[in-house]
Image 1 (tube, rainbow, N blue to C red):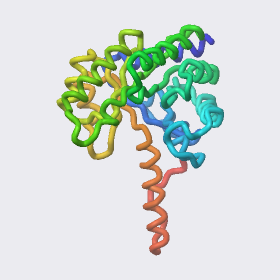
Image 2 (image 1 turned 90 degrees about the horizontal axis):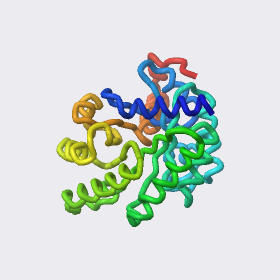
Image 3 (image 1 turned 180 degrees about the horizontal axis):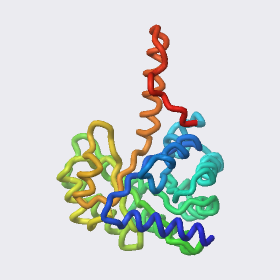
Length: 260
């Protein structure tokens, strides 16, 4: 348990440091070991969407929790870095899901609010944090609000921002160290969230071709940037491109490295 507490403390310190924490989301042992072995990587995060896809399930808690946790446990066991797990919405019992994740070595996690009534969402955040305290660790909850990802194209952006701030502040007030707001990419909205939540309190996802570079997010005061399902899509894009080259009469890409 001492090692678990140390990993949790390390992960928390990475979120509060001046340097932004860049987390590349992984989905199996080989992706985890490749990422963990890359210079500059200090922690890992799993991607629920990608793990579900690996086993042939749609995203959204369709993969059985036992199967999901089994893969996460394999990832944790394969690396020496702190690992954060995507809990999705907590599988019906956020506290119990957190306890089970901690039992396999997880020291941080994402929890979606899915725009549930705020009291219910806050209670779920508190349940996860309580599970960490019961285990004797400072569990690093990346409390996610879906205000932006669930907003329609014609939504009032100011109202969406206000909703994200209200929910984010509520999660911070009960002890979440960082608030995850996927779907926010515009510089002015990122800056407004940092201003409202505080520096090193905001976590965002990097969307290919749309998001600000990690260095610019750091300058704005963002605590953490992760990659969600997009890293698996990067890998699958490279695979499809290689196959296309082969079936059209070519060869596999030069420079392919023996990473497994």
